Length: 193
Image 1 (cartoon, rainbow, N blue to C red):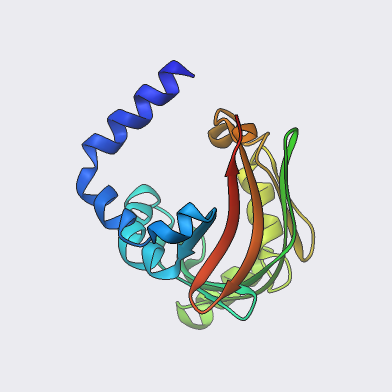
Image 2 (cartoon, helix red, strand yellow):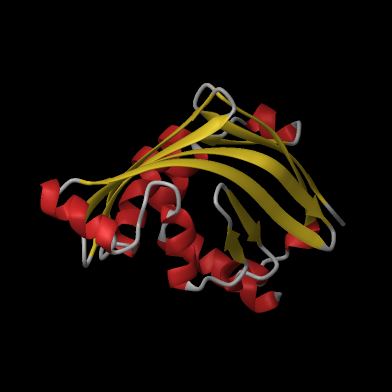
């Protein structure tokens, strides 16, 4: 725990300008009430450059919106065999389980995936086995991600099994999904002793 806190503090100091911009998206009064709001603009403007840099080999562009109980995610993906792929996803949270011993999220998804490289790209996309109904499922299986499972229309994230999140003190925070409206994804939270 000591090493984790030191690493987090060092990361915050190294990225103080970004941290300042990120913090500007949160209202102190909401945080004092135990409400954590994730703004779509935070992702689309502040975090997008970091995500594009981190995943530059596969991700050309992204846009996210939080409206009417759904998360809409538009991606431009670079696929080696297919070329440029436009992927649009509508995500709805079916279950958000955040209790002491279990941290899982079930997400329903609808997808629309197509090649942006014309007829040849579409043919390669079809020949590669990707279809509009199983792009997510095939992608998750191909990446062999720990803690992530997908069926035809549901993705399960088990944060206790994902290496990047399993190290975090998830059991120190109680988190409850509230809603997804007007550009905001909201959670209530309590820091546990």
